[in-house]
Image (cartoon, helix red, strand yellow):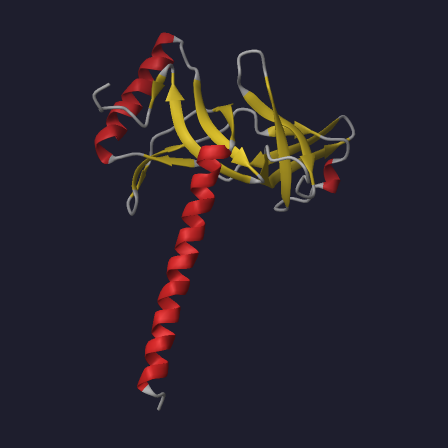
Amino acid sequence: MIPKKIAIYGLVLLCFIQIYVAARMIYAYENVLTTGTSFKLRIAPVDPTDPFRGKYITLRFRDNTLKVAKASDWPQGSRAYVTFVEDSLGFARADDIFAQPLPGREDYLEIMIENIIDHPDEQLVYLAFPFDRFYLEESRAAEAERLYQEALASGMTEAYAHILVKNGHGTLADVIVGDKSVKNLGSPD
């Protein structure tokens, strides 16, 4: 039998370890939010329901391919790192891909290779970004869906994800449909 004093010290140590791990995860997330590089990625949202976690917008990114010199160098399911370039309207797309993290740079994102096209005429890599869902409060989900449907009907289909990137980590800060933030729907502005 373990002496009572050792068991108590062990329990206290275990509690501190759990708090430390949770605090590190929160710090990493908040660090990306406060000091990460901001990008806007074009999306086409859909609004399904996850019975365990509530309403969310499924994010399908428009610019999820990248031309490469040799697609077979990037096996499906492997991890890679991409940098972004912004167009004249301020929207970002993946610009370059790397097998290793980039020393001396902070504005890159770790992604997964979803698929490749290895054809003599076309060498493409399909990118899977680390975020594909934006969760909403139940009360705001219907309004978000209505907003997106109205945007489609009016021909104004500009929707994008506002992400922050730092040292390979990415955080989805918001989803914007037209000029409205999905995060702030239903709140008095």
